[in-house]
Image (tube, rainbow, N blue to C red; front, side, top):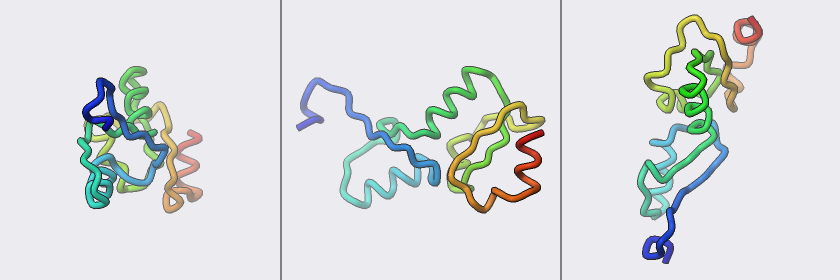
Length: 99
């Protein structure tokens, strides 16, 4: 019904553990008729902010989320993006983030 109505359809989530592409595949597997541009995640919001502010992040996100940051410069970081990534929360990485 929504597809035939004069409204924009978006699928919104706050997940930070998987990329849009992975989420799309999972939703399609559940039978959702959905396009990648219809998905908006917290990673999408983070990427948009990084681009607007023109900063270079240290990405403390799950490795499966990294594709959502393709093309974003991360050399000599001047910002930190934190997602659900327990494997990256260790002394060395936290020390890098605080610096």
